[in-house]
Image (tube, rainbow, N blue to C red; front, top):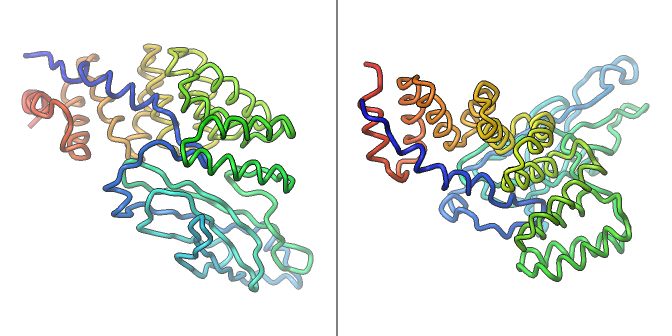
Length: 340
């Protein structure tokens, strides 16, 4: 029986994909998949959780009603739904980009969360929002949200941050670097600014400085999933595999539904030759829509001599990537090793 070379030959392309700079907050300089963007196939959903509703005045547990609005970043509302307390909102057919999810109670804004929807493939993105019930039975304005992605800034620092976003969008990285440098000098605890600073360094191909900035972001906010993910990605790109395990494990813990975090952690374990630890994360990444995970699982099973399982993973990979390189080789492997 022939030994297929396609998995080995595909690895350089896959590793380059895994270690490409992650789009972070406003850093949207990485090219998007135009075809997907135009179709708008993503879904954004989440639960509106209200803590303390069982303790409402007079023992009432009547569900509260909320209006959930979806805005694009320029302030234009594009969708609106009515959701009861502990209910779920769902916005479908979204393009890549950043959105504001705004929650209204009795026409008053009680929560505003910015969410980045970005994936090369059709994907679902979850953002829960937790509210607290005041003594009078009305929801208080949310102080925190599940993603914990936002940082309160002074008006001057907010202006610096917004200017840095604009500079990054226009690929003016030196300008963005200067603006973010001013911001973290003025407020060293701004973990989101440190994360953005890391991404600017990454866009300038300065992995060492990017690593420093991401580490500082994690120091200021240890559970900030985006900084953990980016730090792990930078370490993986530098082949610091042992060091990458820590932040990537924490990224998965912070965001268990992150396809990127699971894929990168699985790949890191593979590089460390710990296949048994890699498998559950690669399976999660595959379930969350990353076809590359099927490719890595197939490679792992092939090396282990489980060729029928490898063939099954290759089939799933080709279903999601019909234009895959060396498709013919992969099809030949499936034909020879798939169980009847």
